[in-house]
Length: 390
Image 1: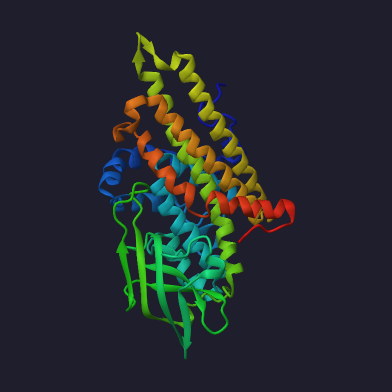
Image 2: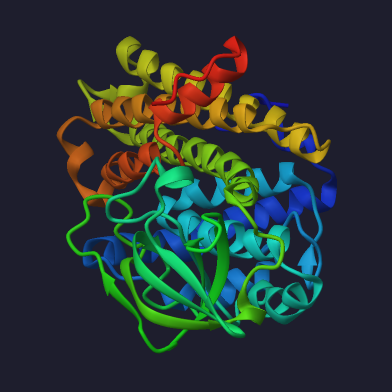
């Protein structure tokens, strides 16, 4: 048995046969359906809607949720699937993470039984696409205390006003979870806003240098009327929002591993076919040094994430566990994609060689779902017992 040059420590062997087959099916989806078209969509900043039916057929939406048409599998499988999607393309993984993780996760963790039955089955079948609106034009890391979007109760409805920025999937989503501060009690609450609701408008963010396939939007809420039945019944403070972010931050850590793996995989293939001085550059000492550095980064990050997922499956994962993984893995990702670009030389900036796409996309993954600094302070608070937040 030879050692897998990508999954060097054989982490997929932690899965049973059925889950491993599903992982391989997602890998095949990435190789055969995503890879041939993704660079063109990345260049044009368009979303490949033609991939949605095949993604639906994989049956992986809402992987860790039980019931409501969801698979009810492990967080470990969910993380490995996120990594595999990101290895093919980080934008596709982000689309999936926003829909399956942030949007569906908000309803699964914070919705009533009726709300789960109403929305989750259709979302699991990708018949309805979800988005998640938390970040605002002037409020990113300070969302827990400084959220400016407001919600005002009027009879059996709520009136929402404000703006959200960087909201993935929002230009075409059927359902958008909006987090707003109740003007009555000052607490953050969640609302499901349906497409074409009067006063709800989206403007696509143009000229991004990263995750160009993801359709991010500026959302404007101008006296948007939402019925009480669309207020997430179990979302009564930012602590409830944080439960969603704990789950999805782990997913982003896995995605950063996938982004690094994608760059490493393309760099390894390039080194084996590119020749200089009459032999493959893979035979050169300095090239092997870069490849092993990349492999070490991806292997260390993947094993860290695997343990985090095991903690999630055991119900023993806390904010600091997810924050450590997100902080560490995104730093190693940034370093790894840089090594890959270095190995390819000038060809590293050409989209046809793929590595440049991962280099650019890494910059977005590095920042969203909590910056390195914010995640560092979450871990620092845990290990010292002192909060260093401003």
